[in-house]
Length: 316
Image (cartoon, rainbow, N blue to C red; front, side):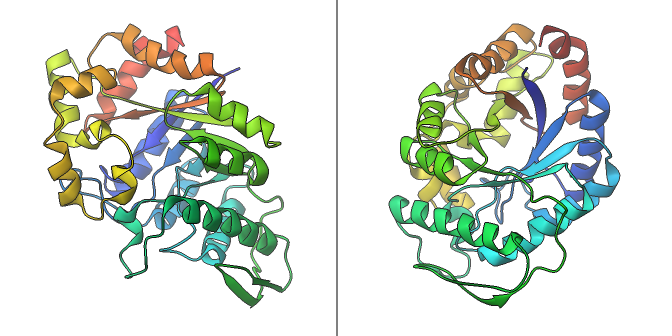
């Protein structure tokens, strides 16, 4: 049976608002939520980028049943995987059985800030695989050392560990990442309803939850939704590798000048028609994803929660 979740968009909302939205998502009936981990927003209009691990600590005490994961964090360049291992273990200890660690190979937008080289995609995938190995080893407890191609850990021990390590869900947009997820992770994460990613994941030995993200914008009219999506999330129209390679929000704004509101309307479900939103969600369900979570673009999250309860939940 498919579970439905809610996207906590760190790029668009201040930390206290994210905590409040998590509470509202739990009360609305969402079983899980995913929170993005960014150092910069995609474009300046979004205006936020709080430190996700602080927000996770607050949400752990503000909710009681909502499962919550990073959607997704990059444990390779900006933050060493040993630090991610400690941070994730702490959150998992604070919310037993409710936390999962979503990881991905990241974007230059967030990872360039310390002056580190931004490697090509195949190297980033290799780094991610090694990072997952570091995290898992540290979660075994005791003093651990690791001497890999990319990371070194020397006599490190995580003292605060949960009773059970949280599952690791690895994000994939192509076959190589899906294969890596199957070989190293406990589940798969995707932002497009591609059944071929699930095939690669299972062929590589993967089993476990399959997460899919649907971006949408509810508003009272289609024109209002189109305007909101264009102002707040034009990056949805930027295709190809640019989303991983561009280093600054202003570069995304420049690339987004090639995107029109009509382009976004073709790509995303926008407006008040529930059938359009259900159709986008159903595409993931039909492709085989058993956890589908919804990103409501823009500031009107309260209106979305009411709309979900009134229009979407009965249909789903």
